[in-house]
Length: 228
Image 1 (tube, one colour):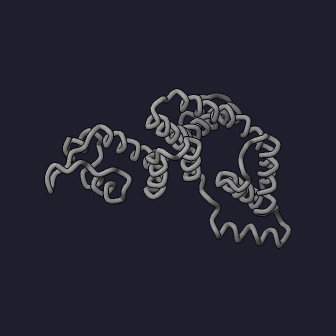
Image 2 (cartoon, rainbow, N blue to C red):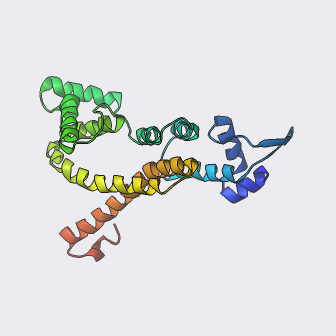
Image 3 (cartoon, rainbow, N blue to C red):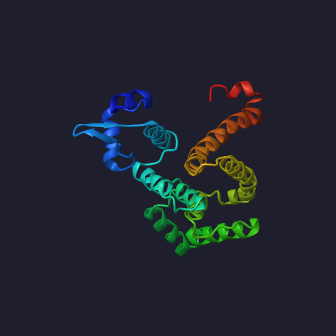
């Protein structure tokens, strides 16, 4: 197909397709003349994945490029592809927040980054999770815990195991979905989808559950949460 048809089928404008090709996240088409190229179903599939990672997963184009580079490398173990995808949806605490945490450490008003990292390390050990404490997601969690302490809600750490209890079966379900894929292309793509878009789905479901729980607890009925 030509680029115009690819645009119609994918819903992505032609200038955007050309931009993705220039940025290296979409392979170039096969040249049929100096000014013409042909594209196939693989390009359409890749375009739909890019748009999903952008629009639903919230990844930047540079993050998507890193994820797709791992996806396209046949030498990358699936576990490594999963790690690349996960790392790109785990925001690192900013340098500014790190400075604030360091100040709290010096003042003794909260555990700061060091104390939060200890809490995360304790969680990993308690759960028996095979995760290094320096994993980007672990550092992200430590940043969240430090922020909770800064705003006076350090007791929220008591819910860590409740959250972990909920996360474990979701993670197993994600990987069960991945295992059903046989072809490597399907396998690694499902890893990315399950990691990035699954994160967005879980977050949306949690918000829906909050609306329902809040309505039941404070408004006396589910009807009251309909407009939230």
